[in-house]
Image (cartoon, rainbow, N blue to C red; front, side, top):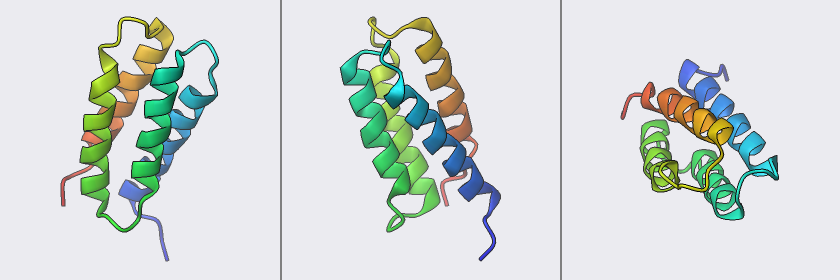
Length: 89
């Protein structure tokens, strides 16, 4: 089965979340939400659009966290823009 552009984008987002989770300079609560968001994106029982929308709302919870380092905030914004480019089926 050929991967669609949406599948590739989801894969990219999962890698971005993995980097956030592995970065010890990012507070634990933010890394935990990154892990939860990654699990949402990996859940193939839901449509790609629904997974992306759910992931955006999860990330939204942490995007305004005052403890988030600037480099992590930049990654989060990149991640959200990737997810927003996935149409809601």
